[in-house]
Length: 218
Image (cartoon, rainbow, N blue to C red; front, side, top):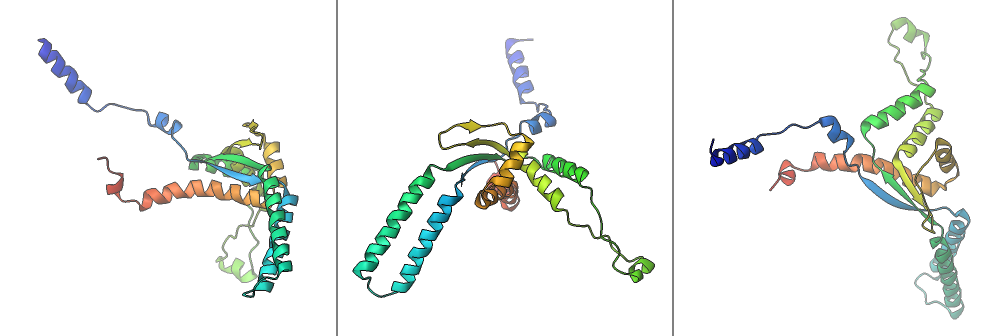
């Protein structure tokens, strides 16, 4: 076989479709990540809210009228107090890094929560339902299972927490997650839950609503 034929054969082989391992692809799949800032000092947040309430009350009282000197001084004092508190609050923000997880992992943690708190059903509503056989199973609510499921979601989703001094924690035991969920301010809990759900849905909605032409290779 000539050198030219060898080269052509090598080129033809290179053009042939190869093989791959889908499990390996899935194991190395990229998931969305996001960072959110949460403020953990409730007292400062309350102070800021009270000052904003006073500012709003003063503005409502003034309305479209011209501010008096006294009102202007009062408003400037309130704004200065608000800015001072905001400066203090800036030193109390923690950065939480969150990663998306696969639907399989999500189902696994729900199954684990359901194992700890099995599904129970309401009793039949009436004797007629029992006699007719038309009674439908109504699942009882289980706040304990819901809370455990959310604990597991946080443990799987939270990658790191960085404090204002840039110290970072990257390992979270279940007890640590439970403490976070029990003691974080409500605003922080809501933001973390929203971030977890947003990463689950946003990419899927985008891919379903985007036309094939947009995703096609040039």
